[in-house]
Structures are given as structure tokens and as C-alpha cells.
Image (cartoon, rainbow, N blue to C red):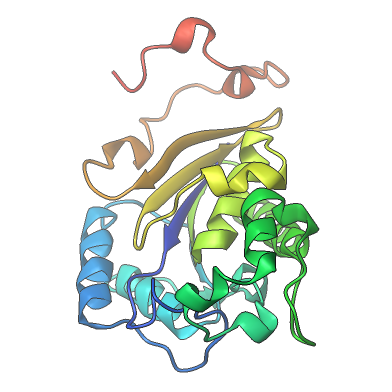
Length: 233
């Protein structure tokens, strides 16, 4: 199975009060730099086959921190970029909540296309992000662990797909700055094994000791644990 580690970028001066979108030149602020350093330390021993980032500066900064000390090149993937919010880009959230479209974003996001010539449908954000994940899974191979640094709504959309949720339910998912979300993709189904993890041990992400391969077609790695299983004990 291929393991995907999703990391949201760290804080910027716009994160929270303003919808940053594709605002250029937006780097991590001091808080975000500390968050990026902390998540890099948490993930230091995880042997990533690839580290892939949204093209936006706040993600490049975060992924760059995780990349330090590794014999890898940072890969940039446009399809992991933020949703294109069109005319909403750069506007304060306190203004946007008064727009009638805000309620649609909250209750029926699959119907939303953001206003203006650069506005993107949220469903297209999900389609391109999931396509990128599936393509990168194929590139790194079935036994690899790789990292993608992206944005809150993009990560939520990827997780919704992995959970088999309609996009209209993706607002139930949270992705905090520099949180870690982990999805394992098998032939049968994805398993969401961590969501919005902002601290603690990541030893479960390290490769297990080599065991004899099961016979082809056994499908054991795709099977869910009936009764819940014993976790990593």
C-alpha cells in the first residue's frame, strides 16, 4: 500500500482573517516558521520517497523545512494548489460571511463556483487534487510513503474522497496549520489513519520490519479490521 502524509502549510499573517487563495509572495510568518520547524522535526525519521508541494510560497516554505537534511528534491505540483477563489481572494472573512454565496459554501459546496473570471468550482478543486494524489501514488509505488504539502480546503477534499464522503460533507473535516493527515491507499480502498494530527508520536509511519510477502491476490492489506483490530500494539 502507498502511504500519503498530508501536511497543511504553517501560518501566515493572512491565515484566518483573510482568504488568501493564490495571493503571490505570501510566506510563513514567525509563527508559521516555528510550526514548520516543529512538524519537520516530528517527521524527521519518516523515509519519504517524495516530498511534493503546492506551488504557493507558504507551502514551499513548509515543505522546504521538512526537506532539510534529506537527499530529495522538492517536487512542485500545481494540482495541489489552493482553490482558486476568484474575486473572493484577499478579502476579509468578516466581509465574505455576509455574501449569500457563503451559506452555499457551508451547506452545498459541490454547487459552488467562486465568482470572477479566475473563480473555480470546488468540485474541480477536489477532482484535480485527487487526480494528482492518484498519479503520485503510481509514481512512488505501492510500498512507498510520500508527503504532500497543501492547503486546508484541498486537504479536506482529498480526505472526503478517501472517506467516500460526498463533497457536500467536506466541511465536517478539519485541517489545521501544519497538521498531519495520513491516508493509506490499497487496491481495495483507502484507509484514513490520522486526521488533523498536530502533535505526538509518528513511529507508526516508519516502515515495518520486512516480512515474507503474502501470495499475490490475497488482498490482506486491503482488508478492514473486523472488530476494530489492535492498532499498532
